[in-house]
Image 1 (cartoon, one colour):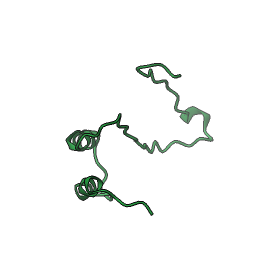
Image 2 (cartoon, rainbow, N blue to C red):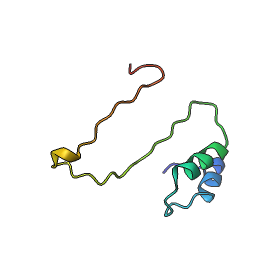
Image 3 (spheres, rainbow, N blue to C red):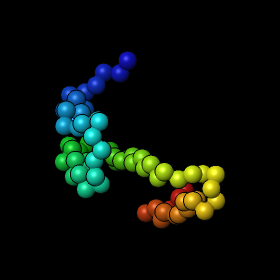
Image 4 (tube, rainbow, N blue to C red):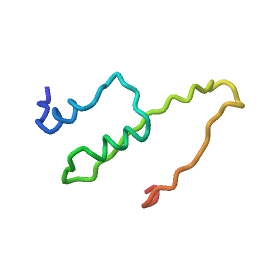
Length: 70
């Protein structure tokens, strides 16, 4: 089992895992967290409530990444 560091424990204290945060609240919370010595990433999950079997409800899009895809 991995030991949780003091820094991560402090981060978890300020977050309510049951609450659904708005985008502004989430970004504000992320920006207030202490910085580390490597490139940090943020993961976001969205529930779109789309029926995948209905062809008229498909969701498509593209994202331009800052340094390309490879």
